[in-house]
Amino acid sequence: MADFPENLRYSAEHEWVDDASPATIGVTSVAADALGDVVYLELPEVGASIEAGAVVGEIESTKSVSELYSPVSGTVVEVNQSAVDDPAVVNSDPFGAGWLFKVDVTSRGALLTADEYAAQAG
Image (cartoon, rainbow, N blue to C red; front, side, top):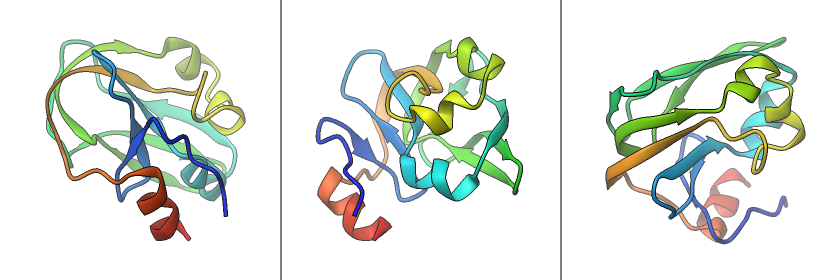
């Protein structure tokens, strides 16, 4: 079983979010591995208002296109332009340099602990 950082919370759709303000959001190693080589990211725009559980973008890989869901509600305050320019970083470092966007959080969706996510991701 993969190790997931204990300081993060996870969505059932394989996104992670930290407890910082603004909160950083990315996809888990499970999602990155399932997708294969990520070749394109469509992320929400800075200033966009997003809702927990809503589709906020897409991740395209050599295998498929997957929707990106927000684990929180709030306003997008930053997008990881480095990941947009070089989407492969999502595969190589999903919990670090491969983060996707930051949100000024107004509320959080139903999130899982690392252990709960690991059990679900199985």
